[in-house]
Length: 202
Image (tube, rainbow, N blue to C red; front, top):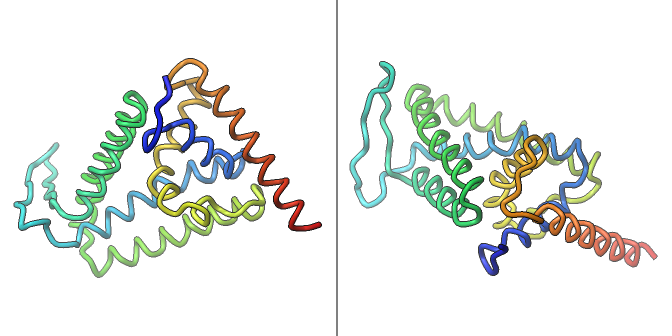
């Protein structure tokens, strides 16, 4: 059953889907969205601890990892909780990926050090964002969703590329009829955008 308000998955996904209907653009986003999230966590590793919270140290398969409870941790936590609230099954998988991204990026950041990490992050972010803008400009022929709804585009993107992959490769639906309902809304939103575009041209 669909939800309303902040956790209205149909509304959020149809908004995102209206900007990502071209298969090549969709594939580009599937490749680049999670690396953007990952490298953001990587550079946020160097932010100070929140409220002087102690760090977490442990060894996994002989690898020593130090986790800092800072802005990077808070970001991963907010994303994880929000995704689970949107859809328990796909959201739990997304939350797991957020946790893995946080732990892995923390390990890499601690090994690289800030002087090298920010350069790696800068290059990765430039490549990923350039790829996405190319996807929109050349293939989608529509400006990115972030130009219309910055917060939604940033927060929703990692979850929606995952949900799209689950739908395309495994036929997953949060509930029966979800894909058909959302597809109809996406078509309606694209048609509305095309009508507005045509009116501006004429």
